[in-house]
Length: 507
Image (tube, rainbow, N blue to C red; front, side):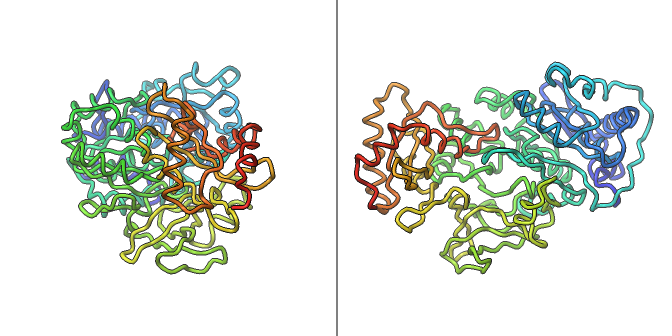
């Protein structure tokens, strides 16, 4: 195969599946045959606008038929699709567009911002143009660029991750071998398609498996998710830990997810208490897994019927995984190490980030930067990101452990932990907590969380400051932005001075 788009828009027709449903939105259903026509029409329109192979086609679109058609059309003509976060501020959008230099920006002109109109082509215009007949796929080869994905910005400036055509075909390992996605399955994700977790699981895997996917243009809430579950009856449901927690708080009927044979979580660590509460409430297990912008698809995952709360599971078929120390040596079971993976969907590198590419992409291996511990049964436990860990009195502090304990407090809705310098210049743990009741007394909550942590963790992990906040800073994909929490500590001199007053610097 010289162009991976054929597997999604041409082969289903050749297999006689043209009349089966491919995509569903609140407004319409599209069969595989109809999707193929729309992709070809959009491809002709992009070529008419002068788009050539390897040129970028940026997509600033809500989830829907237009996004899917434009994405595959760009790839089919040999160009490079670049999905963008639809909630980007104008300045951030301009920075990314300057970085990727698209030939065309497919977007609602009103959403693109002033001064960008010369780049813009609307999805409606691409799909409603003249029907020029079947579009021949550009012969490019599986090692050619197919799409870029920008990292979510949890540590600052997003990077463009460059993926080849072969990445698109690698979803069979997780989608087929782990989830068993096949004809008749109906897939729905609360995350949006610019997020690799949703792109892989809510578009690529369903179409590869000849299933169908529900694409909702609006950002999710409990009411819209319930409506989709009732009308579309998904057999597989994908979301992130933050939203699973929100759905649990929404007091939905216990049969809301009765159609789902499994729910899936990724994006950040899924606390065991959320996993257990979900299964108790809805009777469906959550299969926690781990993927990355650099892999699109999962590399670790729990298996249906074999999931372990608090664990990220085991390697996906086709993926090799190792935990290595700072010297690059493999660590023993029970010891923590950085996760390295060798998997078919690993990216080609970062665009214009040579030093970062060399640190992350080492031969055929991807150095993920995620810290794990593997037990004797081969299950992996996520401990956080290596750049989030820090030492106090020569001993490692893992923010994820602090957060997990803080969330056990009955009055805590969410928690985030970071290491930041105190007024004496030493790095200490600080914990931010969101109360369940906005009227709760901050001093009482701080004291309760402090007592819980000090009874549960070694002294060097005790928080030197506990800050009660209305919400934690998260990306649009739900990931915690720890660098913003660190900034809050550094900007709060009163809080930092309190550390010295408590006399904790000798811990």
